Length: 224
Length: 196
Image 1 (cartoon, rainbow over the protein chains, first blue to last red):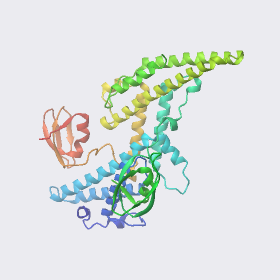
Image 2: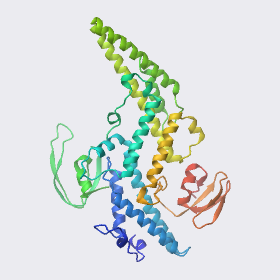
Image 3: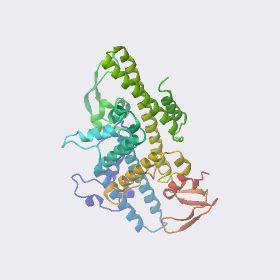
Image 4: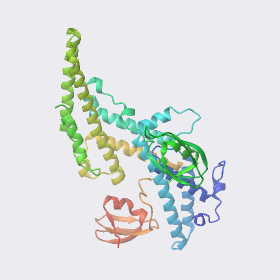
């Protein structure tokens, strides 16, 4: 993969003065990690706009390179395939996010509204606008078709109650990237008691998402 | 028994699996709304009676009617919302233009919701990455091969591919085309992927 991308291109130098400069291969690895995490996590994860922008720039760059290659040259097919693959991963990543935004729209909006200024945001500004429009659209629709014809005390529906929240207790597969000690696992039934586990680097586990949620956002574990 | 019509609405949707959209059942909804109106009015008069004449034995009936009202509201909301989810899926399946058979099954307000949704989605997609955006309704499957064999199911006229060549899509003609160009046409039923 790294071979196809580096036609002696110094892409990392071109990226708008980021703090940690990524090689193209590292960028794509990061994209794939974000993609898998988002796919397997029951809730919407932190928004990664910078990553998305960089990948889009990368794709544009690669398309330009492709124009310069002689038509019919074998290299062109390989480049084309690579571009398609990256575009698929990016599209799938954004689709995962959009699906979760639509599925949990009142909760997602509530979370974003009530976060403190310093905290990382879960929605990009465009996703936020999309979520707000989705809420408004749905409310307008329900009101016009049914609610306004109902008795006066029943003309409102509390979306936060009506739309289910993401199930944070669903089980997820994960691989440990950084060793973790003393992770507290809550009991599931009354007979069990809480216990503590250590997660060794490289090991794979099946656990409740809620237990390891903070480790996903810190990058200590990778959902698989 | 109360709320039966409302539950029937839910059952109707439940029967149609796989995201199919049945016709909008305006009749049933109207009947449920009428039942709600009747229940509410009965409750209003009972509440007045209970207050003025102290008939507290009316209270269980009042509570019961209120529960029925809530159940009706919930069933209608569930019916309408589930239809919206199916309509949303249509945008991803068929693209911006829905087949007429499906459009007949939607009420005017659903059509309006669909149009607004399309617009929101388009605005969002255009904003991706900060330049021209990205159409994320394409690339639904991981790319396996660059070019695929397709057969044309209906006349579609001229079709231009990336290197400038123009293909004439005539019914029953077969072509070897770039996969990414064909995806949408395959979903719309114009082309068929030939897997030999």
